[in-house]
Length: 103
Image (cartoon, rainbow, N blue to C red):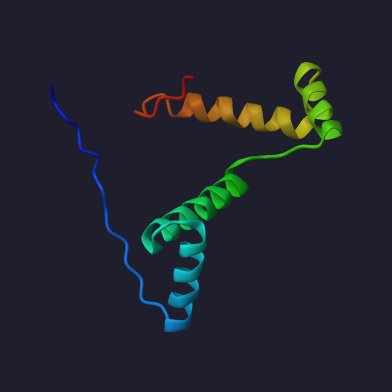
């Protein structure tokens, strides 16, 4: 049977002694090593930052507004019609281009 070992990387940091003591105390209180505590805390914060930047949250009112717009889109106004025409013209003018405009 073959054993698969996950690749691991090392992270190091130099901190003032007072910070180190605080981290050691917190790790001890949670029953973790300093390294485990640091990784768990950093990962938790990293996931929170990523979620904050990548997830869009809507109120129920705004969610219903968005759904209504998707199900009943308004008629294109003059600016949108002009943009669509510009896009179609650009596609035709770039027919020799290697860029694939198709979906």
